[in-house]
Length: 273
Image 1 (cartoon, one colour):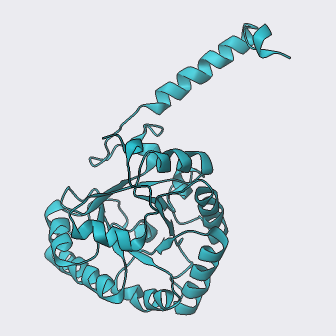
Image 2 (tube, one colour; image 1 turned 135 degrees about the horizontal axis):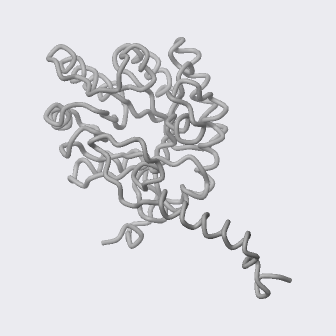
Image 3 (cartoon, helix red, strand yellow; image 1 turned 90 degrees about the horizontal axis):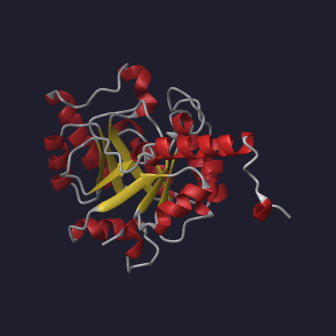
C-alpha cells in the first residue's frame, strides 16, 4: 500500500515507536531540513523525521557535521515542524552542545525543544554521556540514542568505515545500547555496524533500533532524504538505495527553463498579465 494511503493519521509519538517494535511493525524514518520537503515526506506516510545535523553537509556544503550550530538546528527544526502533522520529529543536538557537560547539555536541550517545537532529541554516544542523557530526560525531554559510526566523532575515528567489527568494540556497543535503554531512551540509531551485531542488539533491548547501514534486522530504517531521492550524486555507500533520480530530473527541467527564457518562449501570452 502506498505510504500516502496510510489510514492511521494519529500523531506518531515516542510511545508508539515502542509499540511498533512490540508488535513487529517496522519503523520508517527519513531526514528533512526544510518546510517544503518535510511536508511531502510527512504526507507520504513516514513514521519519523530526523532533523539531522547532516544538514551541515546537505544544506550548507560542509564536509563534516561538526560546524553546524544550535541556532542553525533550531532554524531547520522549526521549519520542519511547521509542515508536519503526523510524523515524530526528532532533532539532533549538534556537536559542542552537550559534550561540555550536563548543565550545558540540559540548557541546550531545553532551548532546542522550546524554540523549535520538535518532539524529541538525538544524542551520539553511550556510557560517556549517560549522565547528561539522564538530566535531559529528567527535564521531560525524550531522547533517542545513536551508536556505531557517530559522525560527530569523525576526527577521533579518522574514517567513515564500518564500526564494531572487532569483539571489544562490539561488546561495548551492546553494553552501551543496554545502558541507553535502561536510562530511558525511547530508541537508538545504529549506524554502519555489522548486520549480525545490529540484529543481536535489536533482540536484546526493549526499545526500537533504527538502522542506517546496519542490515535488515533492526526495528526500522533511516536514510538521508537527498541521498535516497538521488539529489546527491557523489555519495554512494553500499547501504543506500536510490528511489528516484531527482538530480537528472531537476537538471533537465532547469535546462529547459533556461532555453525557453533565452529563446523568448517563456513567458508566453497566456503566462502574462
